[in-house]
Length: 352
Ligand code: AMP
Image: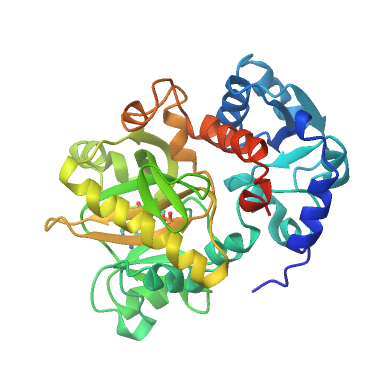
């Protein structure tokens, strides 16, 4: 695991110098930026979009989703932390930000929503499985090449969004494609993919209790992956193909109401295991699960940050409708938590 370069104390120091009446929310213009800016706008918080010239016009095309201010950079890997700190900014990490920044994320001397330690745990697949197992979640078996005795997904190290994954059925098939490569071999889970999006707030206890606060179920998605999710068309057209899992988009999912108990319990356990292992996960997180024909959940991934599946519901989801009497996206929920924590003088609890 990476040495944590910026200490929590240092971040608290930076935060102590902030003008709390003029807090801003900043992120890289990518991934879930539109809803992060849109949600902050609805909560009356000004935003900063770290952007390159090429993508600026995309964000300009959405007047309600663009940032109030663009901070232009040549390369999205270079987050200008000093400038952000001068502007009282809180950085919201999303998938692209985590990916582009790499280990530099641990050096940024600017307050970040959530717990930076969690990113190291989601990044390393072995650590991630340790976390999910510590939470008592059922997970797919991980196999060594010579033990492949059932269909398995082979995942390239660090691959994001399913690119380059392949299903293999035997050691021979594995060695044919992946000999000498750094990969993970996971039992192929058969069932329906269910990706719940949670928000953990340590600031409030009304609702579904977890750790010192509560978790909210903000939404659930499922993904469209190419080419497996349109396989029926390919087959109908009489073609044969080798399944691939590159994420292209997301769709909304509502699950049977009787499965909600499992969904909440998994979220609660993940939060409480995070407390024990690395000091907690305030803010958004997501699980990737497959529900089998016996209605059993198997988790194969946890993301300790906002996920792209939340982009489906900028005006709220079929679940937030029962929590909030107003449109509530994940982006807006983040802004609201920052507002609430600032008002109660508890920003230290939700930032690192
Ligand atoms: P991931 O990079 O882990 O998010 O995986 C990308 C996609 O590959 C997922 O959205 C699933 O559709 C598929 N996938 C990953 N792991 C498994 C598994 N163990 N069984 C079946 N499908 C999987």
